[in-house]
Image (cartoon, helix red, strand yellow):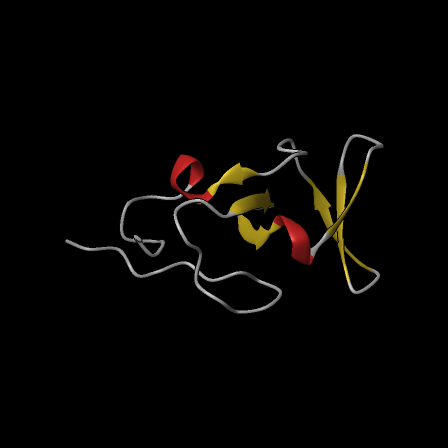
Length: 73
């Protein structure tokens, strides 16, 4: 069974396998779509708080999403 492609919670674009992705409270965002603050890493989107995240530098989509949830090149 194939999973549906995951999309960024900010820009609504699908993730590519090598995108830097930040997970916040079970939601996924492109690293460049959110602002990370180094106080335990709290993610913001358009000055609205999303929550804390542990992957401060982001991870490539293939590292944290399931196969089929991102676009393969």
